[in-house]
Length: 303
Image 1 (cartoon, rainbow, N blue to C red):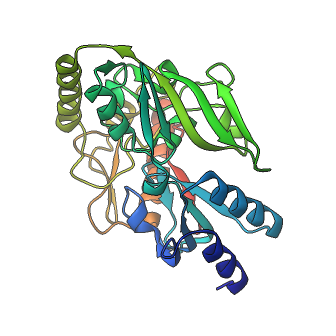
Image 2 (image 1 turned 30 degrees about the vertical axis):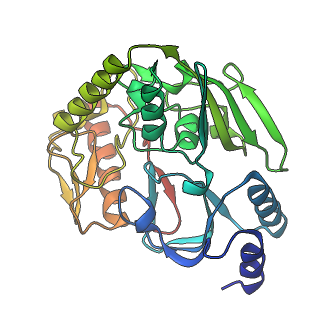
């Protein structure tokens, strides 16, 4: 353990907010992953600024974590500092038709807050298991809705600690991407403009979409949602199914029998199992259809 780094971290956040050798399986929806050297719960912009500044100056690797719903951490863990934007960084406020949420707020919770206030436009997000920060970075979406349709402004922190306000156009939203994918920015918060609606109808729409998810997706098993991006002109799940890979297994990882676009953890999978299965799926699909699937899942650490 780097004692100097540990002493610095515990001097910047409240007691109990720094963990050593924290199992990342507890912080990813795949429920796999070895230990991170340090795991820090961030609670303010100032904490984040000072810690990032120190890590940049010392050259220590770090990773910004939300809900871990799009992340595969290696079995050997991560030799770096995980900065978690979670419950300590999750304020949500509503003013008129504008909802502002910190990066650590769960997207589903923000959608429900909007619904409770009679605001429509965010129903699509109610079942997405990610944080606002992660959703903004990857322009998360479902059921014909995505973040670029509602986000008006994103507040980010640069690697130098400067806080910037980026409007919708500056964000360069695209399919599962944004300008932040290629910049060393950390999302602090997002502002979303919605519309007045009927609260009863909004809640009914959320229930309808969640029912569709439950019927079509393997929500009963750990996964990272859609494993691969949608290739142009195709659907990843159909390509995988047509390649004869439904139910294909490596160790405890399986191509879901319910929805072939998902790779699931049957309960005893390792990160290596999941990654090996992802690669096998990509190879088989490319062999048969000349389409190279691109993972949505981000890899972190040592496998």
